[in-house]
Length: 587
Image (cartoon, rainbow, N blue to C red; front, side):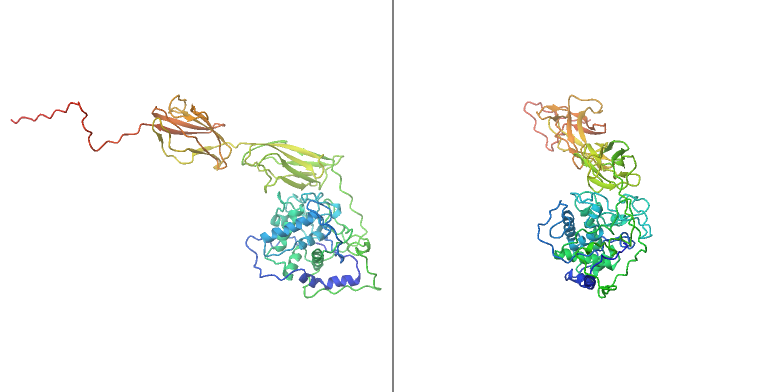
């Protein structure tokens, strides 16, 4: 990030803040137990990650050293400032939940929520910069985007996400309340509140910030690790000082500055921060043991400023813009007045498959010109198992320079039925379009017996001992929800038979065709008991699906063979005896 001078303040205050930097790093953390290096499953940003390179202009305003007045804490879902910290309650809830998540995922990191809040304060004023607000689910109502990373004022980072998150297909831009570069988000991003992982959502971004700072086995209870972690976010000692001071302020219950100016922070889409006359080169981070010297007054000592910096903006200059100014303000982005659906409004897919169609819309002004940077929310509505990748039912993104926004392809799931995909301009229910999507049963390409090919034999006037189980498969995978029917037929299986094996219906009557119901989640259905009458012979048992897939099993009804006794039975009374053999005469 481009580093700007901190706001004008009294010499004594600035000197105190500078001199206390090392003490801040030490006092803000406790004594840590031994901490192992990163586990195999810990997130570890690659050595080439651009996140720590200059990618925007952070607000390096320091907190006032004034205790906060009494008041009730904010509640999650409330966008008003929390009375104890001045942090919007939604953001505060996100920071605390990110700390809890880190305790489970990275227990050796010991990251406090106040550190995450310090990053959020410096990067985007907790997602409220430029009048942006957090919605009830923690997503910003307007996109917060950093400048294009063209390699001029800031680092060179060419597009890595096809404009998916930042709406820019040429260069990357930092995104969201924690200002993640898209390539870093792809590596470190994680869902924090259920749904699709989204850098514009403060719950998701806070969890990702904790993972990013903790990467590499760092322990935030160690001052050196704490400093290194913050430097990975922005390689500047001034940035370390600002984040650390805010962390301490939140730990001590100190109020934040009133009316924090919106300059020196990430820009809205389509705008760029005014270029400075001479871009400031980030300073080489000083070691904790060698704090920078307090700044000296020029000429007469200045009068100490009032809390809030006497109306001066970050960068000194008494109302000048970052970089020394006089630059004209960026004109407001055009207003979106219309949203139109692109492509077919009716989709079809089979269970277990992915829809080939994708929801795509175009937003325009009242004059028909495309609006860039409009936030569009896509939502799956209805009783369905369909989901966006990542198991979410909601996906939010911004329009590109052509005014178009697209959602990822939807997974159809295993539930047959119809649902709606609604695309709307965020926070404007009147600007919405719908898609109708249907999920049909995938065609069965194989039916088979679960127990193999064992012969199926029974005696007359009895029943088959085996319990038949049939499995339905599609492309080799078990298929749930397939309706099957069983029919007893003649030996050549083409003709029905009035005799032979039979099932019983609910009333106990003999039937030779019966509905078996649907396969379970393992793709299996169990047949009811199969009985025999007095007729012996060979028959077929046909298992069929509604779309004509068929399995034919051969069954036999035969009289059991009698066992030949070893001792001849006694001659029944009244049975003529066998005459004895007549001996042959001798000649």
